[in-house]
Image (cartoon, rainbow, N blue to C red):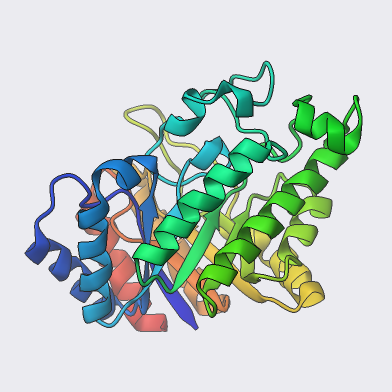
Length: 313
């Protein structure tokens, strides 16, 4: 069983090596055997040595290292929350006329975008001894693009289903490219339950993908002082779907337990629900956030996570 600490946007600017080492040793003490570290265009430009340091320290502490390629072309999630810098400079790769809440979106049929993201991943996988990739939540897979490369492939009036097919082709091509650079690379993909079963089953079946599944939370959330509510589906609700899709594709199961944006009043329900989840569910690749962002009492959340991981794992 792979148990991965989701470690988003940490230690890239203010880098204190002994504190990073303490983090990685604490992960091992919790029961993690891998760590997933986010990597965006900002890291590629400004934090190459910092990332190298993290990878080296994690390996020395006995952890495998997965990378979370974040916000590339605004087609994946991850951290930090920011628009794609490359995309802002390359309007020729945009989905024409689309501007979402994080800016423009890359067209996955765009030859220019595909060449750039392959080069980005080639640099990442060549320069660092990474053990795996986690593709975090493909975005806007049904967004209709009338980019000239899309129209050349699907005709002048593409359908949302053809856009799903185009995204699967893009993800298949990109994952195969990554695996060709680093054979043995472990590639994990997770989607969101509102996505169509047509898309998620096809994504799960991509040959280079080893684990597939969904994320989800176990407690109410709030961004600051508003009344907490269930912003996202419960992670257990995606389990039956995960098992079915992975069995059909011959893949291992994955789940990411979110424990972020948690007000203090929701912490008791997190304890109760995480206890039940770790007792009842066994994904082949399980990931939990390590000191997830924007919790009101981060130490309390971490104590619960550590205690229950030790109890069940």
